[in-house]
Length: 73
Image (cartoon, rainbow, N blue to C red; front, top):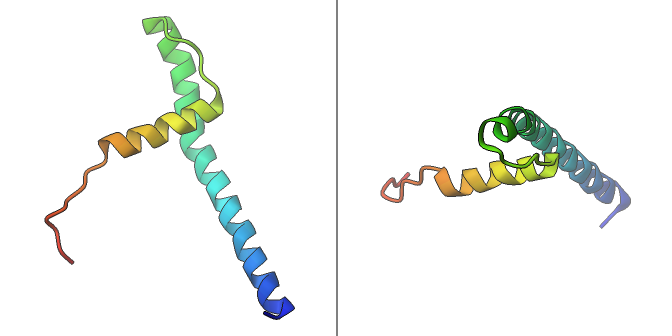
């Protein structure tokens, strides 16, 4: 592997990490703010951290996504 190819791969990796961080911020921040604004006062639930909000979004995605196993493309 030449150094140009390694540089391209490293650049692509850093772009991917940056996009993942941006997605986590865009998805986690509203959940975190809304949870900490509503849930402790309405239901007496604890305040959560930003990363717990990101994990909560991931858990909801896994549990509640719609999967169509019959569809063949």
